[in-house]
Length: 101
Image (tube, rainbow, N blue to C red; front, side, top):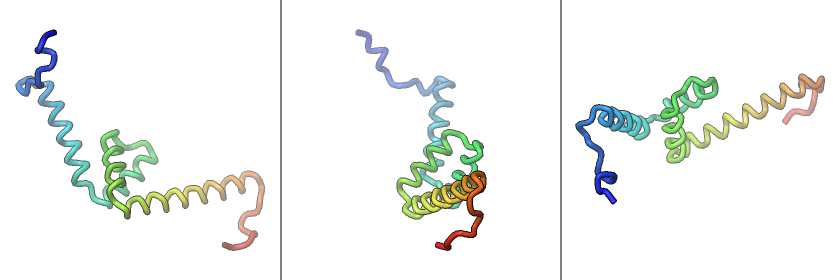
């Protein structure tokens, strides 16, 4: 078995340097993400406008931030309620004449 297979990456290789630079930028994004930026990323993700690294950064941020977890749950509850209202409207159900919560 050759030891050359398990050698560390050659940092003088331009392609590998670029890979390490990208990974470094992604880590920096994750570690410095603010709650306001995470909220904006969640909104942009809804419309398919985010890069996979931004999605990962927002998810990792949410794992560590209780405020953002709560915000995400609230957004999901509002979205669910809006979908329920839209479904009732399409079905020809009551349009707000029912009991108030």
